[in-house]
Image (cartoon, rainbow, N blue to C red; front, side):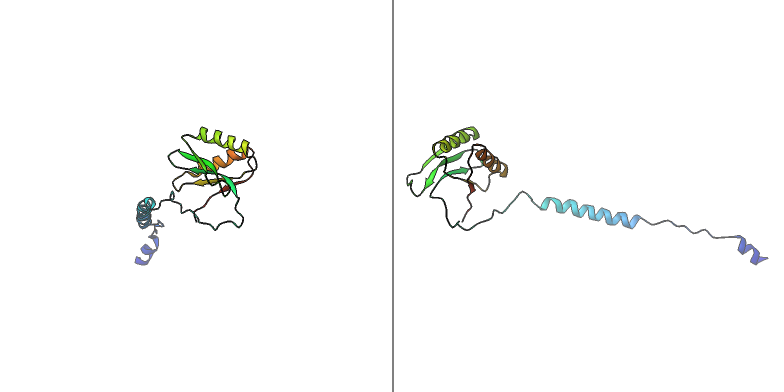
Length: 144
């Protein structure tokens, strides 16, 4: 009789997954990533250096961009020992002066020298504007 009672009772197994340890691990990983994220600074870019070109132009229009919106523009080169540098206060004056220099010297290339603190967007938009004026030779100056 005792054997028949045992067979009528069946045990039910629980098939639940214990997720508490997984939640603990995920919370620890979340805290680690939240602490480590501000440490990395993607805004700092190390500028590359380059060798001098084999045949640099003898005369060129030099544009030096500064981060405070004051830029200098002028003609530099071996033939022109007393280079005429002009400081412009805003972007519009710089573009007008570049257009005037290009009209006076249509075959002269343009060399753009951006400061380390200058925004990349300003340099690229200046190259684009120079191309719109019909200047075909635009170069970037690097520190040596």
